[in-house]
Length: 311
Image (tube, rainbow, N blue to C red; front, side):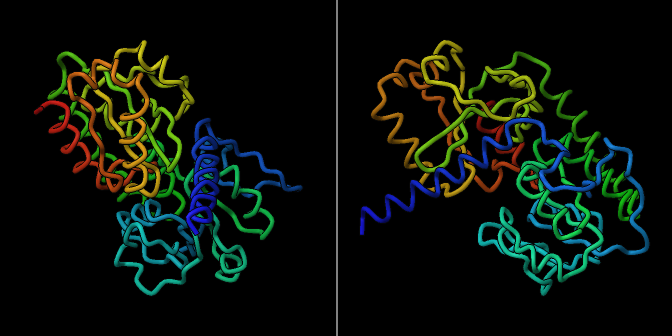
């Protein structure tokens, strides 16, 4: 039985790692399906209102939180998830299955005018939406700036432009206050994003990295040339000499924390990091510091500020 559990854990880790690395580059609007792509994007010039009260399927909790913030009611499909709560506005709405693997038959049966999913899944899902003849919009949840740009797009698509503009103005005011508060020396941070059995480096381009940047931190790997995550060996990380190491998880946070503790205990190289010697290694709460930008970012910023500046 123990062997079986280990096999299951390894398979799950492999699947999650594939998802993480898929999110590393910029998403493409190309699909593998034949025929014209039905992906809606402000980049390809087909961004316009979808009509009167269009039917929307939101396949992730973060996407549904955006729709809720826009006070949009006509959401006909939501994901099934045990990790986060679906906004109360959408209680009783049809479940379309896993956020990473929506049930395409259910999605099609709901006859949506548009399906909205995280941009990190565009490579896997765009052709599937094309195959069932459903238009799709992929929400940029990889940073706060990206999320708010998508909010403006969604406002156009759903006729909620005024509310979208209001949300963007609130965010810009929030950013301005932060920039004024954190204009001094920038601590240099190394951010590790883990899944059971593996971890990668989160750059400034990732959601967690963008939060750190907002409070004046310098990511030791910069913006990763536009990549959210990088595969880096610990020897190279040591050369970067971070002041602080932050650890978080994409999924299964309890298992990931155990993995990190074991890694830092058994791999001797970590003992040579100044951040480890100075006891400046911190585990971040998955609820606030996952893969996708969410509206709980003010609380996440508050946690980071206390962690980094009040120690």
